[in-house]
Image (cartoon, rainbow, N blue to C red; front, top):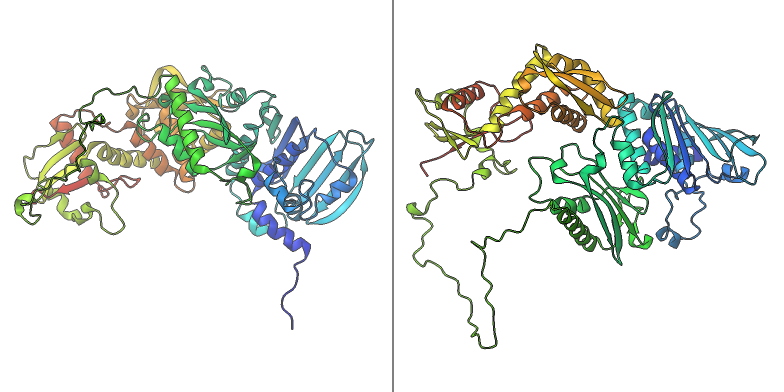
Length: 592
C-alpha cells in the first residue's frame, strides 16, 4: 500500500501558517506590508484583545478586482514574481504569496476592496481556508481586511499565546518596525477603542520623535542624537545615533534596509566599536540607521520573517558604517580628543636612502629557568581577571572555599584595606581575601530589597519637586502590572496622560539615586528577563534597585564601612556571585 500522498490544501496552509503567522504581531506585519505595497498613504489599524479577537487593517491603496481578491488567498499567488531572477530585484515588502492563505487557514477573514476606476468593490469571507461567500459591495477605494478569532481552529497554537499585555507589546514592536521606516505614510493604531498612536505623514526625525518622544516631553527626544549620513557606490547610510552621555540599558536600536527592518549582529558590532571608550558601565547607545543598497546585493529570503538579511559585501559595509559613525561623533565633539602623550609609543624611524638596514634581533635571557622558585609570580597583576567568569573547563576559584569555613576567614581584630577604591582586602588563613566592593554591596542590597518586596515595609521619602517618568507605549505595558509592588517599595506614582507618570515619593533606601533611572532600569530588567507578576519579577526589581543604589567603584570607604559590608556579605547564604552571575569574592594565595 502506498504511503506517500499530497496534503490537502487546508492542512498545507495551516503548516505554512506555523512558519509565517506565529502570533498576532506576525499577522499585523503581513497585512500592513501588503497595504504599503499597494501604495497606501494612510493606514488604520484596529485591535481587540491584543489581536486575538480582531485585527483590522484599513488602507487607501490601489485596491483589487474581484478576481485578484480571490486569487490573493491561493498559495504562492503573487503579483511581483514571474521568474526566479525577480527574487533578486524586488523592492517590495511581501512577495511569497503565503501570508494571506496562511492567515485565512487559522482565522475568520473578511475583506472588502475596490479600485479607483470600479463603481463597486468586492466582499470576500473565508474561514479555515473555506470560502464562505464572495459578492459585490459598496466600499471605499482601498482595502479593508478583518482577521477575527485568530487560531480558533488551532487550539494548541492559541494556548501558547502570551498574556494580552505581552502580545500587545509584540504588536507595538512590529508597528514600530514599519512606522519608523515609512514616515511618509499616515498611521493610526487603536486598541480596545483607545487610540495609542496617531502619526501624521512626516520625515524620519519627526517620526522618531512622535513615537518615542512622549506627549509630555520637556526636551526633544531627538536632541539626544547626532545625524549620520554618507553616500558611496556600494551603500547609502542615513540616520541618527545617540550621544554617549544619553546611553542607557534600555536603548532603542533599529536597522533598516531598503524600507525593511532587519536584525544584524555584525553591523551592531560596528556601531559598538565606534563607541569604544565612550560609554560607561553596561549602557548602550540608541540608533536608527537606514541603509539603501542595490536589491541584488542583499538576500532577504534567509528567514520566513525576512528580518535576517545577507549582504554581498558585509565587511566593507562594516568599515563604512564604523567610519561614518566615528566621523559624526567627532563632528559634534563627542569622540575623545587625540592623546598627544607619546610615552610608551613605538618610535617609527624615518628611513633615508643612506640609512643602513640591520636585521631585527630578539633579546632573550639565556639564564632564564621557569622552574626556579624566584620566577614564580607572587601576586596577580591583572586584578580584573580575578573577577572574570570562569571557563567551562575549570571551577570558579571561590568554589573551593567551604561555606562553614568562611566566617573563620576573618580573624579576631582583623583590619580591612581598600585597594584602588574598588577592592576590599582582608587577611585570611587561606591567603588574601579580595572582595569587589560594588558587587558585594549589590548582593547585600539584593537580599534586603527581595525580602521587602515579599513583605513590603519600605518607608517612602517625599520629593520636594516631583520627577516625570516618560515612557514609550510598550514601557507603559510593562510597568502597569508592577504598580502595586512599586508602591509597596515606597514609590508614589501618579498617571500623567497615557505615556507618563509623576514621581512624588521614592523609597528612603534609594538615597541620591535618580528615581527616573531606577524605574527605567526596573522596566528594562523585567522586559529582558521576561518576568511577570507570576514568574519572578521580584528578582528583576530587587536586582535593578540593588545595582542602582550599591556603593560605586571609586568611592572611598572607612574601616568601619568596609568591616560592616564584609560581615554582612559572608553572613548571607549566597555570597560568591551576584544574582546575575558575577564574581564577588576570591582568595589570592600569597604563598606562591
